[in-house]
Length: 237
Image (cartoon, rainbow, N blue to C red):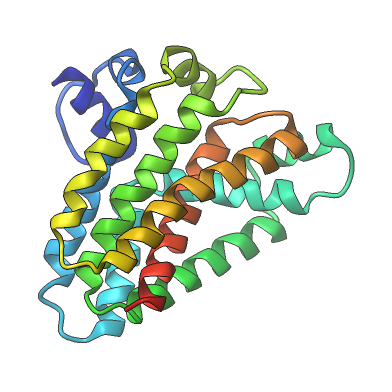
């Protein structure tokens, strides 16, 4: 229970009482998908009652960003700046860890948000899409946390040291209940592919550009994977 509370205190802005130590969650980072059920479930409960799909999609985007405190979105902006930075690895790392947001970050954040909104609007059910996307995006974080060698000391290196190679397998099992939702076999198939492929591609990119992974890369992975999954489901709707 302490691990679950620590997870939700780390991944959401929900008021959950006295802060728990991050080490409780670090030893159980395979629990990431449970945060997806909470965030996606709360948002889905709201948008389920909104008949206008465009409005529902907009509120769903706002909901997942607000409930997560925009922490992962901040990582997406930092990654955009680092990818667009010109120069050697050290310059890209400075752009990744800089608190200021540049044009690259704004561009990646804007494009990802627009694609997420478009995918939700094109979905048969915005509520189902945001729940599936959020749960499986959290799996991508669990996978990257366990496999992404850190290039510097920080929150990711702390989680990485406590992670075990079998953590992604447990995280995957926690995603299985999404098959009970009204989602077609084709949509489930593309979701399973993207939730693994997106973090692996980002792992390769991060290793090449930065020499490893940090918390910003893991956070960005959540945002990119969610958008990719919801778009993939929309294409097969």
